[in-house]
Length: 178
Image (tube, rainbow, N blue to C red; front, side, top):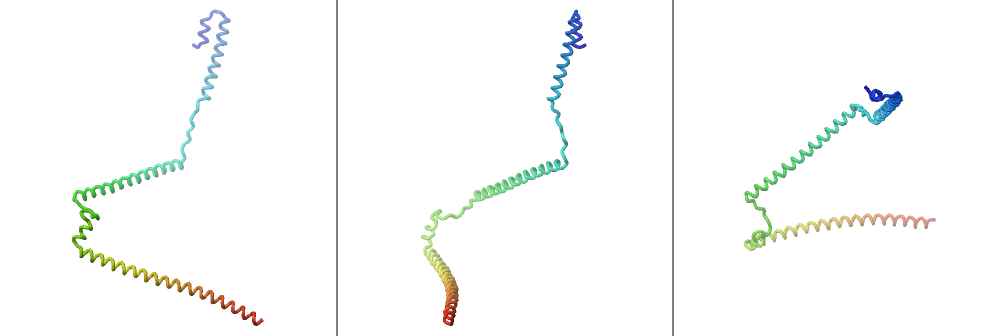
């Protein structure tokens, strides 16, 4: 039973029946128009299946990302292991009381020099002799190198001016003969 039948059964006059039938048609048309608008507004998602190339590209990207993450994690673990080893070794050194030599600690060189003046004098003389010998070798090598370079420059200049002089002499002789 629809709305038009209910309205017709409630009304007693034939004019009312005609108005109800007209209203029924108008209501149906309005309802159909509303449904048509709604169906136009509703979007239907279209889904295209991915191509095999797209699938392989996606898988390759995922593998590359996973490999990058694995390398990063490996580097972090390696760094942590090296750091832990360093800290452990430092703890061992501190626990054993290993001392590092340092100048100036507990009297340092001054204390040693006052206790061993002859040894310090010998060390100074040895250092002086070795330094003097090294400086003489360096000076001798520098003199030899400077001499060789100077002689080369003199030779090049002499050859240049000898050639220029020869050419000038030829010009003078040719002007005298002519």
